[in-house]
Amino acid sequence: MPVTGDVFHLDKDQAPTHWYNVLADLPFEVPAPRPPLARDTGADEARAPRPQLPPSLYRQSTGSGRFVEIPEPVRSEYQRRRPTPLYRATGLERALDTPAHIYFKFEGTSPSGSHKINTALPQAYYYSRSGVREMVTGTGAGQWGTALATACHPYGMECTVFRMRCSYEQKPYRGTLMRLNGAQVVKSPSTLTEAGRAALWENPRRTGQPRDRQCRGHRVRRPPVRRALLHRQQGRGNRPGAGVRARGRPRDGRVRRSPSATAQARHPLQYERSWSVGPGGLRTVSLR
Amino acid sequence: MDSMTLLHLLVTFESEFGFELDDEDVMNANLDTVRSLVDLVVDVAEGDRGAVAAGPANDGLRG
Image (cartoon, rainbow over all chains, first blue to last red; front, side, top):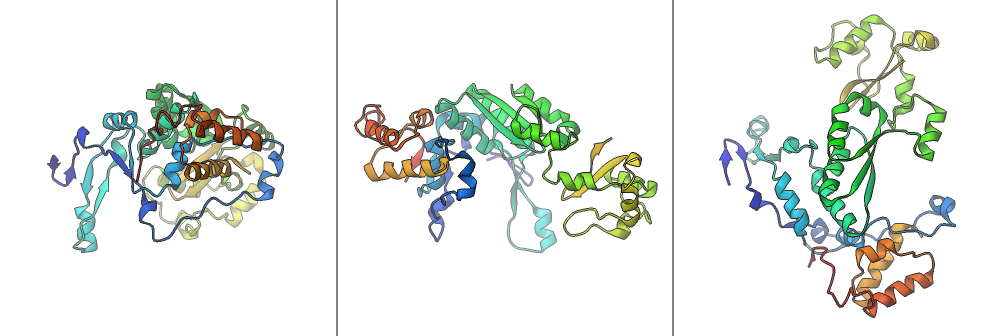
């Protein structure tokens, strides 16, 4: 195995031949799926269930075998797109003053920017083997959508990705990657589905985020605060005394509405931007 | 019954009766009645669909 400093590079022929099934080593048995509650099935009582998952995937999810052999068509795709390099985190080891060796896989070398291709490829393979011709999925920031679009392509499957509207607009390059792999990318909510039409009817500016209501609710008008937020978004740090730090970032990640912002929110015509602070930092949500 | 419960039932039949259902057969089956479910299981068990005769599907499972 070639080693460069703290980086370990695997050759293509060292790509794994088996998946490890953690269920085999659990000290307890995982219970069978619970039957659905009546309230969950009430709307579909008249419709017979259809399997949404190939039995092969279900068996792997519930089986007790310790190793699952990777089918050759999946393994050859792994060899094309992996292995990703393994790093030893020597700096973290020093910082923690630990004798333990800490390693991490760097998945940023994958086109999807994450490990998600590992599971997207077998899923696409098993669905294609089941006669499914198209996969439809949802994605937020776009990593899963990119991974599935990349995975569908070698198995000759079509792929449609419903992508969260605000992310669709903020990160168009991810959509480009999906389209390069032949996927159709749709802003979500969209007018293509009943649920999407209902959501847009309720609020045409819906961003697609689960915290939509919160995103819409916060309105910032005070120029110093807005400038401070812009500075933070652009990585230039907080401006001292601008008020953002004074109010602080609460533990739940939400920006609390200041009394003045609350008052200004009563004048929607003065509204300029919506902001949201989440685990990933500050982001602009929408413009009006 | 939902789709996951249906899959659980089918996989239970597999281990109970010692055969393996083909992915495509299951995904394309119209299992809207108990009768259709029984027909699918009987067909596979009797080898009419060739699943048993051709050996287990290569889904990579290994004990």
